[in-house]
Amino acid sequence: MNLEKILLHLKLDGFCVVEGVIPPEDVRTIRHEVEAVMAAQGSADTYEGVSSAFEVLGSIPTFLPYLANEKVMAVAREWFGDHVRISYTGSMITEPGNERGRWHADWPYNQEKAAHVPAPYPDYPFQLSSIWMISKFTDENGGTWIVPGSHRTSDNPTGAIGVPRFEPYRTERHATGPAGSVLLFDSRLWHATASNESNGRRISMIVRYIPWWLDIRVLMPGNPGAPNHGGRAGLAGERDPPVKPEVYERLPETVKPLYRHWVRSS
Image (cartoon, rainbow, N blue to C red; front, side):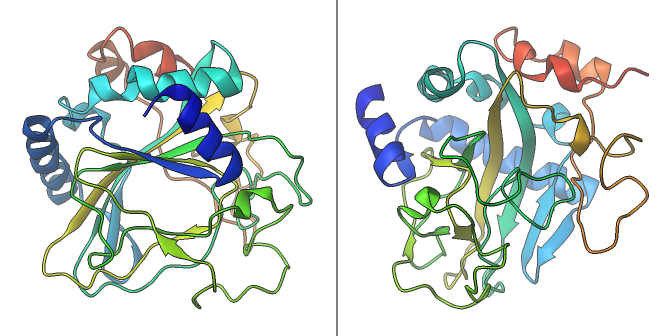
């Protein structure tokens, strides 16, 4: 799929599945790396049967070059210009029989986050979200639930619009694709973790791209200037820590500019 078609899908539908980004041999290696880092580091349970890990850059060497994949970066540059950054990197494993997740949109549109854009939103994407399919995503194993076209609304179910968070929505569909694909979507798109009805794990990497001018210091854990510093009641913060200098130095040269803003100073 060429850039023009990807951009059209993102504009009209709010999402696009791009297949064949990671070749099968690397998919297998990345899968082992993700499972190993989550077993060694421990993980945070998002929902029952859904676990995430956040400080992963130092443990997924095979995946690192794909962070600057030209097809993905071409989309980000079309939206944001040349100086693109990454705002979030994490891994996720969804076990068989997991709990279905809530409808939400990603930061900065998630009204549950202490730092967020208040609704109604301007009709402009502030962030490009991506889910990298390290295992295949199918209807059976719970490819991410999405609501096509929902990025064009001025709010989402994390706000006060009356959409039940855990219930099916009439136009929902699974985002599916073979292992090695990447789901690109406007961060305003309504989406939710789906139930895995298969016998195997569903494994993914989550990466989000932003323009240089979007201030993400509000997301840095422990930042005294962050709205959630000190634990504001009812408002969640982020859990993605800064990159350690020794990890940053091992990043591919094409990837370093995407994390230069997020390196731990000491």
